[in-house]
Length: 406
Image 1 (cartoon, rainbow, N blue to C red):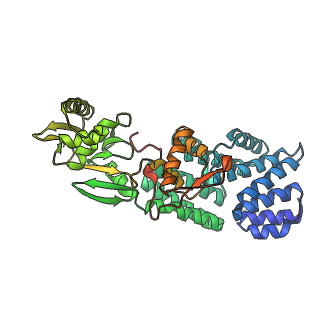
Image 2 (spheres, helix red, strand yellow):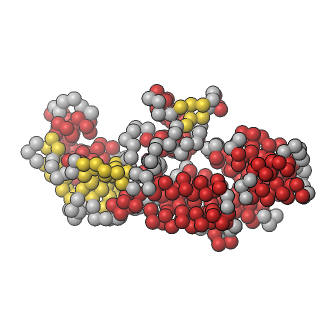
Image 3 (cartoon, helix red, strand yellow):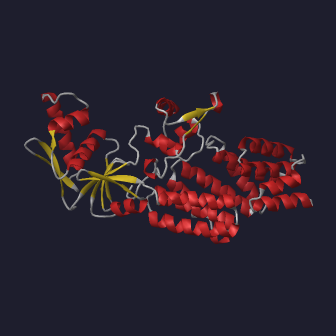
């Protein structure tokens, strides 16, 4: 490796893409193409970066498997940045194995982090945690250690573990300062916003207020009976009753909790739970059946009693009943949650992250676009969807990930 290539690589390692380009901008040999691609990625021209990295990978000879693997890892990082979740993960795994076989453990660990970040992005937290547990952060250089802690923080935020997330972000900030890479410092600062911005709304006794992630964590571990409208369940001190597959029962539970300690008229329950205009005898019978099912479902945490005009909910042990509502009440809130990171997403990537069909996601995007909440860029297969982030809002509780007790 010649002196210009060495100097350009050192410049990229400290986050100086302009310095790197000054040395190799006019060169067309494979190492220079790879470094130019990395520099363009750091400057934000991701399309040009991918093209350069592919040219470099093709230009390397059959005996240069290590260099091709490094190009593959760099391209995978770009694919993750542009939310191209359909990018072949097997190619990244093969590149990681090649790097390990050639003793390039730093880049192999970086490839492993990319795999874990993809798992985190699509909500597969258990797999991400298992993979993360196989890595030793103390043996990593500062930049990779910061990335490692950012993944830990991301998992903790998804699981609503604010204290763990804050500790991981503090460690990430220290490592980023040691690495002296401005982009990494900015990423840590952006991730820290999730701990200070509103994460949910608390509805209790006719009033509403915003909750930060730490307050949500404290609420879920308290003796308060929580009707969790973020994950469609009823929770109390670690006990969870899932009602995601029983939407009528959850709607009834939420209506009763919002009115607690008062009762709710039968007409209101029929109109909201069954979307009926009139509470005739047929709907009244159906309401009694559904209330009976709700009473059996919640029997360990609460009772549902009849009153003169309707029904009321009574906690068995808790002194308070509250509703934990999403920060944004929208039928397509999970789609908005993913788009709120400010990145451009394809509909197929959104479908993969949400575990939904592509057509379902496409209908949601069309509906959101009609109201001006999202916008499309490009056409055909190149079309991407994006929206600016909600100011001062974290969308953690809109994402498809489990809460404590799941």
